[in-house]
Length: 255
Image (cartoon, rainbow, N blue to C red; front, side, top):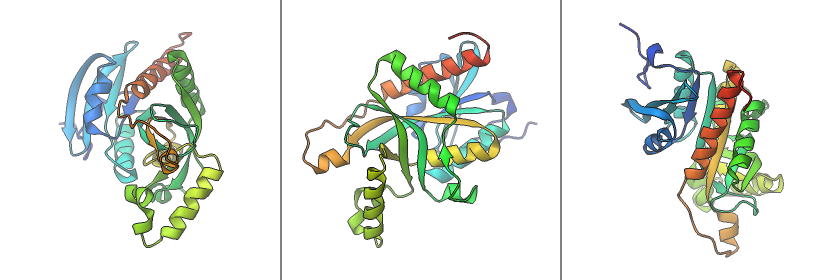
């Protein structure tokens, strides 16, 4: 009997070379609708898995849950059943004042404020996305005609450390660092990409990330009117189209 990976409960027969990894288990079926012949495979803990096909190549869609620890587990176990290329598609909060709700953000690097990645590589090692995956995401966003940005995102372990820093014991440190990230041109804040990029670097995998901006707390703090938006459809389309471009390149097909 085939041994299944402990957390995702998948075996090598379920494997594929490519995976799209959202955080939210409820988003998996929505993403899978953009694939050919989608079907559910397994749901265990926060790891909800569907499979489908892009250009004849099997692709898994697997949720990671929230934060670095569960994302690292998901990546490690998917790699053991054959996944080599990962695209994270999720949500973020805008930090740069040019990033508006509804915009697509593509991460080419991540600020390592999460703890999980520090158990893989020292904090001095940069968390950067795979260049080819990032290039495919940018090309996909351009092809789809959506407003998008490419740059650094901030990753954190504490959602409420960001949204209510004054309630934290290290409030002055959190606020000083937040201001520093903004001065450095950081586009947005989220919770998994630094782990994704560092695990990929250590394990010899390829990874990239794309996000839907829900809102921008810097603009909100200045009283700028903005509509909070939860519609992740465009970010999903960018992720799927980017995976299509990657698969065609791997197949030797000119996109």
